[in-house]
Image 1 (spheres, rainbow, N blue to C red):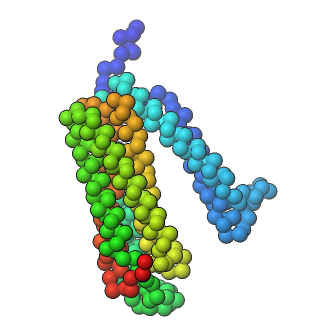
Image 2 (cartoon, one colour; image 1 turned 120 degrees about the horizontal axis):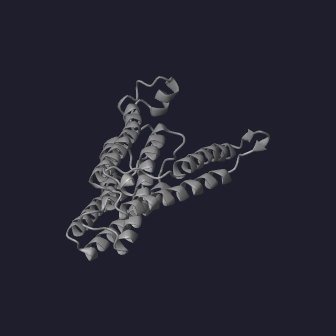
Image 3 (cartoon, rainbow, N blue to C red; image 1 turned 90 degrees about the vertical axis):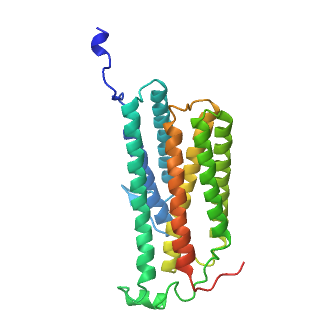
Length: 292
């Protein structure tokens, strides 16, 4: 009888899981709460079925649900891998999935680059005359003082490039079963990622232009801000990998979790290089640089 139920293939038929359904509910609550938060920020109500949801609390409830689902779902995935469910075929498909995810992220950032280049390359061809007048027929727009690309942006560029070398060091250490090198490489990468996020926050706090009021500020903060969010996500990803490495869960033969984190981090590095050269250097060329 046991032989009839024995597995004779390399594919992983997962057990029924509640996490996709619960995660969808959490995402909906988070989106609904975000709308209510924005309505409150604008000084308006958000009444549904006689209840005013104009507050940030529902957003944080949804966020807590999503974060818990992420923890529980990925814990199940790690458990399945340790139990031998991630065969050669399954591991290959996990890699395909990560590649497709990164490809979708590339298109996500392509949209923000498209918005930036649309405004910067054709400042005289705006559909609305008011926008043309606001730009002054040039880019950066008239009256905008830009950030010095050779100051904090250059520092952050060097920081991320160094983090790319340390995560590669950690990967090579893992392949050679050098546990100490793996842990040190991951720890240094995390530290560099935290430094980048702090410098980015400091730069935003002292930026000479705001998100609202100019298309330069809008495209700048949307593109660099979403990249900063990805750096935070990647740092959390690497922290989880560091904890797993300290527990001895990665081996030279089976370490896709770390590999996926390294791919994601390299993707973040490459996107920043495009942001640095396109937005910080080329996009601010010829504009007055803000002091301080």
